[in-house]
Image (cartoon, rainbow, N blue to C red; front, side, top):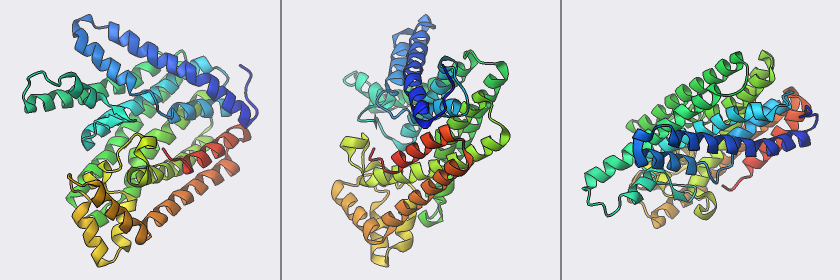
Length: 360
């Protein structure tokens, strides 16, 4: 393939590369299902659940890897496809484990790995405790399969050894950083909601593995220099923060029919988001009491959620959080314009604008 010279050609490369990524993922799952006959049908079914979770997503992370590669001079879609697939597998692992920690069994409008296992053993005669053990085991082990697959896909990629090592190190960085963010997120409920640092958590938990690492993987394969890597890292962090702030808004104000996700689960879990922090900071005493009594209630219903939304809007918390998301998007956009070569910068600016305006 001829090296790209325009943002439109980067788009074309990404569009041509995504089916190769899909093929790599499908082939990986199919091969893994057959590699361990002694694992039996349950092992194969677990792989099926892991593979099904990759359907219906935005493929943001593979897009970033393909675009980072092509926009900086790469021209071999088949070589980069397994690495881009590894970024999607990494995302799958994070989703499975995050849903487990949050107690969610639906993802993108369909049962996730845990939900699929629960449905499979419905009416089996197992005790409630046994059913929960099965569900949790499926989620833990399915996430582990996806995580190991991200390494496996890179290790088997037809790229120079030093690129393989660099990409494997990026995955390790993503895993450790995300765990650090997840721990802070989960353990934040041991302290006051106002004391949480949701932007720090968002950078650790989301920005690094969702944007920074996929971009840097593509850049690594294209031979980017350290200065370019620094610019992409700064851009990726800002874009990742913007992405998470919008995602948190959709988790409370979104349309489940569009997002495929409940607008109650984050509120029921008392998730320490920037939106909630701002609500507690800006609301008056009466409305703070509303938030304190309803957010974190596992039995919260739609009527109670509507009251929470009223407080978040009336206090100005929602507007402020979305303004912060816009500010981070502007930072990412400025870096793209000023520091990133034209083919890639044009693509990234369009992506930044699209993610800032998304509804799912």
